[in-house]
Length: 161
Ligand SMILES: [Zn+2]
Image 1: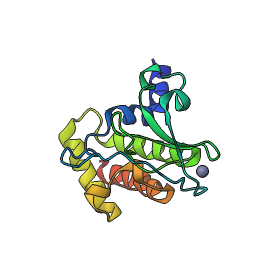
Image 2: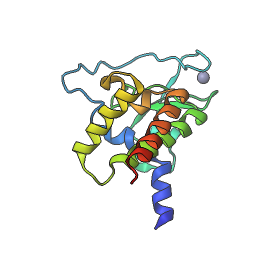
Image 3: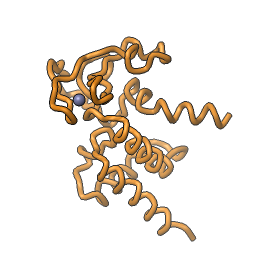
Image 4: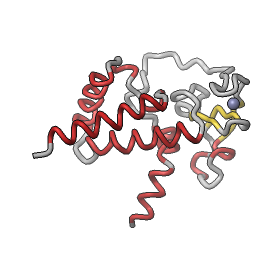
């Protein structure tokens, strides 16, 4: 059973890409398709590909679109079936930091419901000194991910009795 859970964690970015994170999606916003995105690592234009390229073992993601730079092995998933990116492109290193930040953050609210989840986001944004609207792990860089992990660690230590 533990192995299944690990496998799911590995695919968390994919799952997030499918569902969106809820808070990320503003229904009022006009979802204009993006026609060009540049890789933040090499500054070359990224290619719009389907999930078949990024997650060949995930048939359920084949319809999804991803901005992808083969050279840097960097990508980002898109909202719904659009070409609007969910965050910024990430290479393997940043993806693993975001995953770690997600795991840390999720441990604060998982199983406690959506209310606790959204208040956890508010607290996190506050600690990081950023706008709640900007508080998306999918948009964070490595330094910010480290701050998230640190903030979660501190908050756990302070609530341990
Ligand atoms: Zn690149």
